[in-house]
Length: 265
Image 1 (cartoon, rainbow, N blue to C red):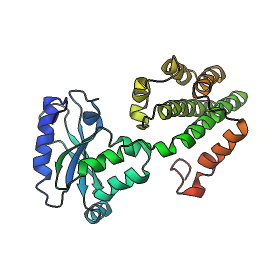
Image 2: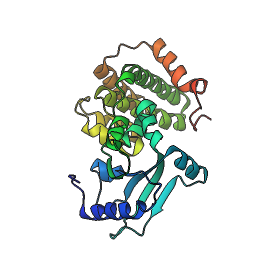
Image 3: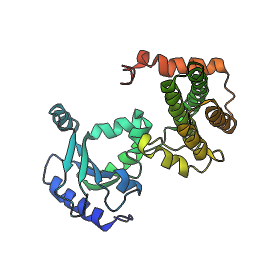
Image 4: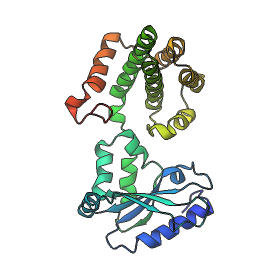
């Protein structure tokens, strides 16, 4: 396949292709996850996407067949296959308007089996960084950095540990997302967030140490240090008035522009 795959993962991919391609409705098998990203350990599982037509995928999802788990195909300790059923149209939807974590799922992903011409190109489009959103996101992230520092000061006034922990983790998130956006790197969601930040070529000196200090001891000093570092590095020239407006639109009033995130629903 031209990739630095461990032998056990190569064998599991071959067995998965043989097994799932027996289904004539299967259009493709895409390998993603840690194996595709080059982050796999010898005992890592294999993450795949099983591609079907829109109609077939919709029927399977309606029957709660969104995921696939198989621990019989692997021949190594701890190995198993973990898969998701996706529609062919879903890949195009990600390319058109997908979130960054949805896009990152396709970054480095590769086709192991296909009955669809051009599937590789569709995956590449889904994994593209949404450059047209970058400038607005940068100002949104920067504004949220400012608001999370303010929340930390409120937490200190009230001695509210919950609010302090919340503000600290969110400040770390939006600070990191600012850096990723400046580097035109996709946000991978929380599991690989710090890994992606670590490999970002342009970032404030000591960024990871500042984030670690904030998460270890969420408080005014650690929050102010990280916020100041990101504000100076990003040079967005944000006023607090703009920051509050962006926070209201993107966080407090997000339900006005679509379904609210589960944490707010």
